[in-house]
Image (cartoon, rainbow, N blue to C red; front, side):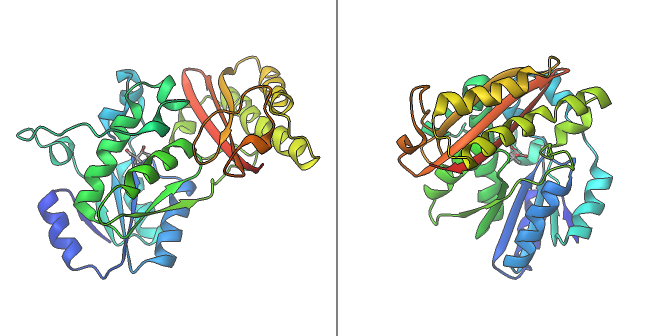
Amino acid sequence: MRTVTTRAALTTALAQLPRPVGLVPTMGALHDGHAALVTAARAEQASVVLSIYVNPRQFGNPADLAAYPRTLEADAQRAAAAGVDLLFLPDDSEIYPPAVEVATMEPGPLALRLEGAARPGHFAGVATVVSILFDLVAPEVAYFGEKDAQQVRVVEWLAERRTPPIRIRRVATVREGDGLAMSSRNARLSPAARRAASAIPQALAAVKSLHANGERRVDLLNDAAIRTIGAEPSLTLDYIDLADDVTLLPLGASAHLSDAASGRVLVSIAASIEGVRLIDAITLRA
Ligand code: PAF
């Protein structure tokens, strides 16, 4: 694996890589979820580029940015072991060159609700950095995890509008033994909070199990998730949301899953514990 830190070195290294290229954009603190993205890219593309850049523009809260885990040495080892060909480790001045006014990218209508509402400016920051990485690497395909379901839809929206368009490949969420979705943020949880956080996948499992038994009423599916999260007092629920999986338009309390025009429903949860915000999502057939 080769490592580059500048735009110029990246361009030179890319010219030597066989196409097609798969890009795995990350903010580091790599875990098995990232490894699954690399494994998919490795199997499908001739070359795999992984970027690590903790993007300040997508953090509204400076404390959250400062607390974001940075584990570069371990990340480089993990990236090499997973099969990355080229590791891109830019600093702020490579992504946002001081002499250039980098325009903020419009993240589009899919960014308005859920995380977009809870974290104003977050998706504009994601869209901006992802667009810059797409410009710099020009991958044929970019790989994103389904845990960040809304991010995947926002990036798909962005990628479809590019010329040539970049294909976005979704990769299934990787979970811990108790179901908690892998996330770089999990490392910030105390053992007690870590145990309590498993109520999030349990809430999604409760929805899934009701759905498997034929339940299609949004209010009842919603209530099952709220009850499961409510049983864990240290968790603060921000939202449980059922929406069309494509448009991300919400299904109201009196709706039925069949009201989702795409035929698929995204069930998303956001909850906080010890000041750490965790998100998770599953999709269901309408
Ligand atoms: O999902 C992430 O790690 C980040 O939001 C991304 C896509 C790398 C952009 O900074």
